[in-house]
Amino acid sequence: MVARVLVPMDGSEMAETALRYALEIHPDAEIHVLNVVGEPSPMMGKALKAALEADVEEKAREQASAVLERAREIGREHDVDIQTEVAWGSPAKEIVAMAAEYDAVVVGSHSGSLADRLFVGNVARKVVRRSPVPVTVVR
Image 1: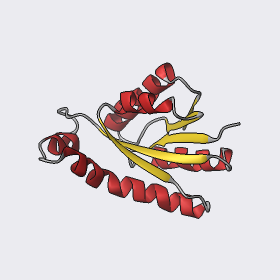
Image 2 (image 1 turned 60 degrees about the vertical axis):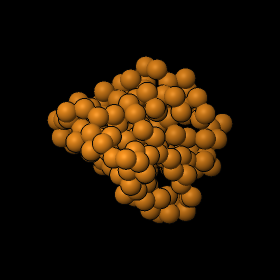
Image 3 (image 1 turned 180 degrees about the horizontal axis):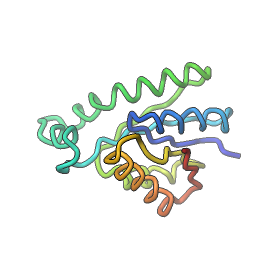
Image 4 (image 1 turned 90 degrees about the vertical axis):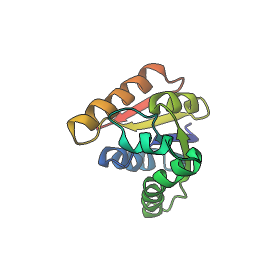
């Protein structure tokens, strides 16, 4: 039985689809949504900006707030109280590190733009290869 499910969300439509899937397939499970504010890189302007802030953790929570509020809204549509968490770092590494605390991970396959597909699709592949628990990739 799957009692706890981790759903990483990045604000994309595919991540929302993954959350809805997790809620439908695991109706009795605790659903935890994780938003990872990534490490700074040339392609990730928000992460670079956050890294320059005096209080990195507070800035990460600020950046994640819209994504996590959307997750809670989707949960309310299914009469489910969604638990939310924010992490800072490499998205794939953070997801895999947290996965051991759960029975399953449900992740979206990719986002809409080419840059998003390269980044998020790469994250999903890494999570599938490295996760200590079963991973469902939702398209």
